[in-house]
Image 1 (cartoon, helix red, strand yellow):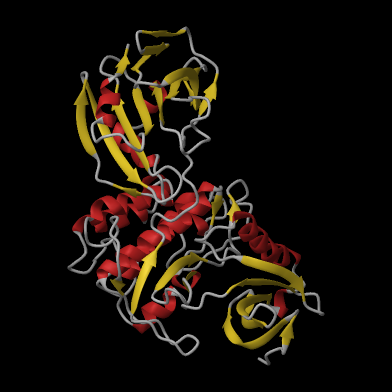
Image 2: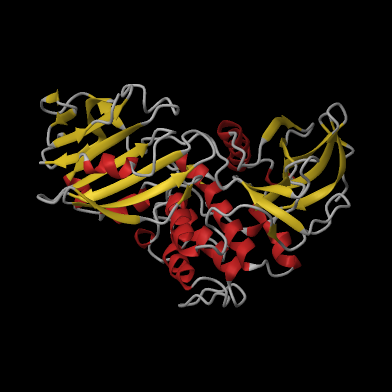
Length: 467
């Protein structure tokens, strides 16, 4: 293959890789003194309109999402022969495929990497996108910069097979890589959703942590120093039936964090020894830190949202607020407003009850500086999930969770999970319990005040009264 001298304004230095649909070149922007990766549609596909549109979709999707965990798009263009190209950020640290080819990655680093990959895919899932082709070659590394040469970010790349969830069904072409592709992706009539990516993540985990070469086998054999519970998590992630897997990447990330302990995925900081990457630009790393476990876009509090509009009578009496079957004792300086629980409907078709309390309850969901809490009650949720199972679905994929704990307050047994975040709200508390007198689940999401003590959450939960 003869290298072009230029693509658009970029001088071409060398070939970076060749895939089924595209060729990637290393380009140099003299004006900005910066290297870029230029992805060009393969010549043999240039006349296939579906492939051309898929190629453009990838660039549009990455540009729309614009997240530090995803490869960034700088520009798009067309060659003189009409083939489209996309100018991407250059991942100067190579790919996970390169790292695995260089040798076994130590278990603490492998667990941390798996967590970073899950967090990156969780970004896609939050935006309603399924990747469908998670392989070691699509996981890239990018150095943080000359001021911190030993720190790098893990990036999710090659979204050429990604589709909006609304379109990722049997109507789309079969796509994926054998060994990482979920079974339903080989079924032309199946619906492909976030659980297909969970399968791919599970296969990546087996590749990173397996004691044997990757293979499809009834049992998963991991290295001796991998926590035993990790095998159970990966087994669930790679279950044959989608319904038996974790619902999305964030839920898988949370499950891995809880069972990994101090070995790798928990909110550990500092350098992690990692296998050297293949030479890149004349440089080889031997010490690397994987960053970004909690460095993300602002956390969106209210994964279960509240809609305005009261349910039944709402009243404030003696520092306690009541709406429908819910009563809460308000912290000093807080007020409350009655709401309905968005997306939750009872057997009668009516929205199920909820409330929001905060110093400014109508601004709380949109202003990360405000403390506050959401409280909702749902009979339909209790019919399908336990409190612990419900919390496993309501994760914050880019925040670090502490181990869950059980507390009993005012006759109610609560499951509580605390998340620490580096952006947005610094702390988010998720709590759920079964109503002691009826088949209903009560859910509380809390953003404590920055100056509150360790007992604030327990006191607030003790003030949640259920009728």
